[in-house]
Image 1 (cartoon, helix red, strand yellow):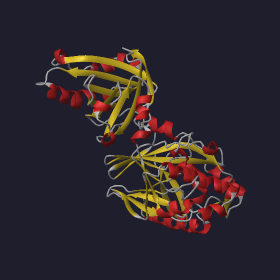
Image 2: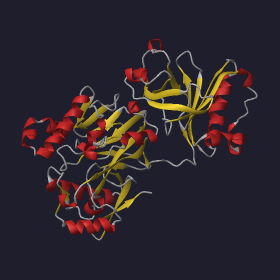
Image 3: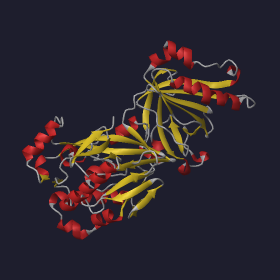
Image 4: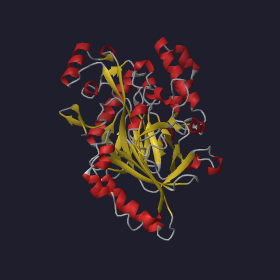
Amino acid sequence: MIYTVECSFADPHSEAEWNRFYSVDKLPALISVAGFHTSQRFKAISAGCPVYLALHTIDGLEVLTGDEYRQKGGGNFARWQQHITDWHRNLYDGIGIAPAVNKDELLVLCATGAEPLIQMGLTPSAMHAVALEKFPQHRWMATMPARKAPPVECLAEGVYLYSPITEQLTGSRAVCPFPSQQAGAYTVTAISDGYLSASLSLLSNIDADEADKMQHDAGATDPAAVHINCYLVRGAGRTILIDGGAGGIKQWGGRLHANLRLAGVEPGSVDTILLTHAHPDHVGGLVDAEGQIAFPNAQVLLHQQELAFWQDDANLSRATERARGNFLIARQVFDGYRETLSTFTDGQVLPGIRAMPLPGHTDGHTGYLFESANQSLLVWGDIVHFPHIQIERPDVSIAFDQDPTLAAATRSRLLDMVSSEELLIAGMHLGELGFARIRQSRGRYGLDYET
C-alpha cells in the first residue's frame, strides 16, 4: 500500500534545518520500521498543494499503529511543530510499490481522473484511499522525464508535479520482489514476463526423449515451458528496459507491465529500450492491445542488421505463414516507435554498456555487456531457449534460429568465453532467478544460478 504524508512549512529561517532532519534522520528511521519497504521525499513545483510530500510503501495500516512505528517513526517534531501547516496523511491501495523517481524525473499526481495524465502522454496508475483521512479519495500517479514536463501554468486543473528531494530508500527487511545485480553504475533487475510453450521437437541434434529426460533431470515440471525474462536497468540517470517481452501475444507471457509496477517503475519513466532482437516474445510487450506504443517516452535501439532484416520485403515474401506473422508484429512495433527508433552496429550504445553482436539466432541478434572493474555482466539474449539442454549440449539448436549452424557456433564460442572469464550472465530464457554463471569441467558446460 502507498502511505502519503503531505505538509507545508511556514518558517523560512528554519526550513532548511527541518528538511535536513526529515531527509537525514526521520526518513532512515521510518524505513527501518518493519513493514516499511520504500520511502522517498518530494517537493512540489506546482502551486495549490502542500509543498512537501513523503511517499512510502508499507504493508498496511497496522504498521502505523504498531509499537515500533511509534518508537522510531514519530520523530522529534516538537521543535518545528508550530511551523508545520497543511498536514495530511493517507493510505492508498491499488499500487503495490511506489515508483523510484530519479533525480531527472518528476512525480505526477492528479485527483480529478486519469485523463489529464493520459493527455500528457503518461500511463497513470490508479489508487484509492482506504484509511486515515481518505481525501482525496482517488488519485492517479505517474512519472515522467523532467525535460518533458510542461510549464506548470499549462497544467490541467488538479495536476501537480513533484521533484524528488531524496533518492528512494529501501528497507533492509524488505524482500526485493525480483533478483538484481550491480554492474558498474547500473542496477540490473530480472523482470519476468511469464512463459511460452515450445515443443521439444523443435530442437535439432537431439532426440526428443533425451531432451525430455534432461529437462526432468533439471527439475522442470513442464519440459516444454520456456521462461521469458526482460531486464530493467537503473542508474546513471536512466531507466532502461532490455527487451519488451511477449505482451500476451499467442498467450505468451504478458506479465511484464504488472511486474514493472511491482518494481516501482511506470511505463512512462522508461527512457530507453535496448532490443536483443525482434522476435514476438521480445517486442510484443512494446505495444498494447490496441497497437499503441506502451512506453511513450522511450527511445528504442537495435542492431542495424536486425532492423534491415525485418523491413526487407524480399525476406517477408520468402517467409513461412508462421514467420509472416512475426514480420507483421516487428513492423508494427518499428512503426509505432519510428520517431525514436535508432540503430547501431557495435561498440558502446550507452555509457558503460557495449553492444556485442551474437549472430545466428537472427541476423542482428545482440548481447549487451555492462563493463565494470568490479563486476561485469553480459545480457546474452537468446543464446539458449532451454538452458539445461543447450548449455550442456551447445550443438543443439532450435527451429526459431534463422541460421542454426551459426547459432550453435556462436553459442559454443560464447560459453567458452563467459566460463573462462567467470563472467556473470543474464538471458531472456534463463529461469526467474535471471542471473547465472557458466562452469566448465572436463569439456562440458554447466549452469549455476546466482542466488
